[in-house]
Amino acid sequence: MLTASQIMTKQFLTILPEMSVEELARLLLRKDVTGAVVIDKKGKLLGVVTEGDLIAKEKNLHLPTVVSLFDSAIYLGTSEHFKGELHKMVATKVNDIFTKTPVTIDLTTSLADIATIMSEKRIHFLPVMHEGRVEGIVGRREILRALAEGS
Image (cartoon, rainbow, N blue to C red; front, side, top):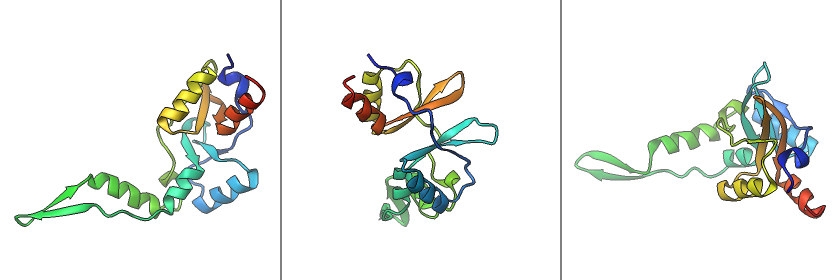
């Protein structure tokens, strides 16, 4: 059974959270990749940002349903979710849109486990960690490449 270390891409984008979202979009297109690893100035993993994060920035804002009862407003849904969506929509920096608690895998994670994580959690960009450092990434393309090569 193949593992993350055998299918991961070792050449991946790393960016700082201060990068503008427009610059990120141009970079992803120019490099023909679907995401990047967000790091601090010391190289520590802060999170990941993907095309999906950029696309979500442009979606329609759904206003929360409010019920008025005895001069009180009752939100059907969380106001925190609404605030989060609004924050992403007005974002100008990667820091405002990236996933700050990414799901990660290690070098020995099996292809079956990677596929399960991606499918069940609806994630398609996984940093591969070893001794606290990002060693590579596994995305949908790496899974497809492994399948095409007859894993």
